[in-house]
Length: 198
Ligand code: NDP
Image (cartoon, rainbow, N blue to C red; front, side):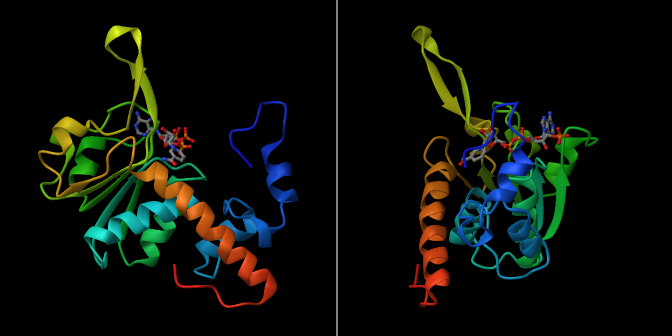
């Protein structure tokens, strides 16, 4: 199901009508609960993509200070659960967080899922930090057109970060790939066959 739904539709009701075994988005409360409890679950695709991307540059995230900016049910909270499972020390920041730049500056790993164009600046980052930019924002560009940018100011951040994902072309394609991965996983589980190496 594509979120957000129009206002007149009850999102909770629709989510709960999905069979958790077919919930390839990982949004059903059963899967969210299983993830929080550290159990086998279908995990939300964008958070899973973020984790896979971070592990390409740091195969072990153990002991890292991770700051997740954003606390939505579809990105912020599940990505925080995944990072906790990887033994990170996780802080979840949001619109009421005091001194956000100071909080972000502590992070070895930053996950930006805010929905505010280029909000996180290079000067907020710890040198060498891994930065995963989930944001997809359309802003005005020259010649009356628009362009996509993330929640991180890529130009200043790339000078400080150890690794950073671009927008577009970073987390977005990973979300699609993880949706296919979850679909294969769910199909195998429902038929009782082994999940292939992915
Ligand atoms: P939501 O709007 O549901 O959540 C945004 C979060 O950011 C909220 O927790 C909000 O805090 C927090 N926030 C807003 N403003 C600030 C601020 N000034 N300082 C600190 N925190 C702030 O967004 P989503 O999680 O659904 O999406 C986030 C971004 O990721 C969007 O740009 C979206 O388009 C993109 N996205 C990209 C995907 C991909 O595949 N690449 C998939 C899904 C989303 P509070 O809770 O206090 O309001």
